[in-house]
Image (cartoon, rainbow, N blue to C red; front, side, top):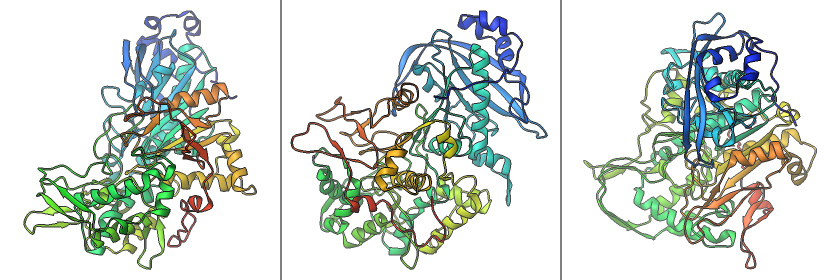
Amino acid sequence: MRKAHSSTGMAIAFASIAAAQSLDDLCTVEYVQASLPAANYLLGVVPNVDSVVASTVTNASVTAGEGQIGGSGFDFCNVTFSYTHTGLDDTINVWYYLPSPDQFQNRYVTIGGGGWAITSTNTDGSGLPIGLPHGAVSGTTDGGFGSWSAQVTDVLLAGNGTMNDTMLLSFAYRSLHEATVLGKELTSNYYNNSDFYAYYAGCSEGGREGWSQAQHYGDDFDGLSIGAPAMRQAFQQPVHIWGALVDTVLGYAPSSCELDAINTNLTNACDGLDGVVDGVIARSDLCRLNWNANQSIGAPYSCAASTGGGYGGGSGAPGGGAPSGTVTSRQIGGGGGSGTSTPAINGTVSAQAAALVNRLLDGVVDDEGRQAWIWFQPGAGFSDSVGTYNSTTGEYEPPSIAGSYEADWVNYFLNEVDSEDLDISNWTYNNLRDVFLQGMRKFSDSMQTTWPDLEVLHDNGAKVIHWHGEADPSVPTESSVWYQNSVRQIMYPDLSYEESFDQLNDWYRLFLVPGAGHCSPSATNGTFPDDILGNLIEWVEGGVNPTLLNATVGGGPLEGTRQDICSFPTRPQWYSNSSLPICVYPDQDAIDIWFPALTSIPVPVY
């Protein structure tokens, strides 16, 4: 079992470090300055000793949520400092919570961000407390973006037509690595202890960042908790254009009320496919095989007038930051609804709406009908296609994507222009496919984050818990399944499907959370992980391989019931004589449904 071992580092003050016992002794500017990594400990990185700020925090509380435990009575040293790169006129800030010596349990954890932010930490320190219940130092970075609330789009362009490649790579993978290396050395010097475990935790963009670290720096961590990773950005952001584009091409923009009726029909039809009717679609794979939106044609719907607000459960659903972070309504992906006032409406589901939903669920295609990418699982809703009501014409129109993350991707990253406008009214399906290809060519070594050969990580002995809500409307669940399968195929090419998973599951497990949304619970009666980082720690430090991920039902008649989550590719199935679902290998059709042939993309998609 590998532990984090520091080099000699700064030799000064080690005698006093060994003697220091209390938080009051350790949490001073002078002591932290003496504990900083030396200049060029990480080649080209020079800490600014004079920038150190240290303050004592006592009896702090951490709120549980989003798969992480909480607690109270935490004492820690709140530390920030900056560093520069040799030869560059830059300043990068890093922020660490260092538990009091009596609460430190020989652990360090780097946290990730959300949206276009490299960190979920804001001026109040939200995000950093994730490590405190586990006795871990927590660390993060501002990426050199200028403030803790800045996003990469604030600094990505030096000017229209000019990409700031330094900021791009900082966001893509480099700054979190530097924060980790500096944080581990700070931890070693601060506690005079070079023998501790190093972890990573993040969801959404933080999940992509986790894979960026695993792929580029496989020996930095002993374990990584990676949730709903917004990886494969060439597909992840523009896939949210698909909903509005299908509206446009088919010439029909449904109301949220009509789409709700279809979603209700879908839920009723697919709920029991796992063997129990509980309001949760736990087998979205079987739903895709057995349900067709034509079944909902003629279903009645009726909705009262609305004074504003978008479609519920939209692609900006909460939960996109690191596990303890606070997120906005515009996290990863599309806008998810009109937000305009709408009149009362009633009617029956039309054949046009059914055809549109079938087109969505089949995934992104080009003008020739060849598949380019996948879409969201049944149960995630259809927020990207919700029409905007035009009070002048009295008609619903395809939603605007101006100001969305997908517009940011096309404008800032692909076209290198500072704009939030994007008009797709004249696009065909080929235009969207071409956006995918442009992003693949331009960002294959940075924002794609899909390198499937994890040999360094594996040889290092690290463990990965990768988890994803099955009803995620922001990052397609199938995206995670696709990446894990790429890793399996690349690393175990000569083994059968089940044999290769037996090997892979020794160090990398994927868990699909039934009914869960984006980095958070969604279905009222659904189950959700209790303590993902804790499960990871048990695996790394105690050798407890999580064949099931600990989880509890959050509502309904089974509220509080333990209902653990199956490790993919096994899926949950209830039987008449079972009080809990059984994890079973699905039939071949239910396996194959996750892996369509992407015949519109001329190169491998990992």
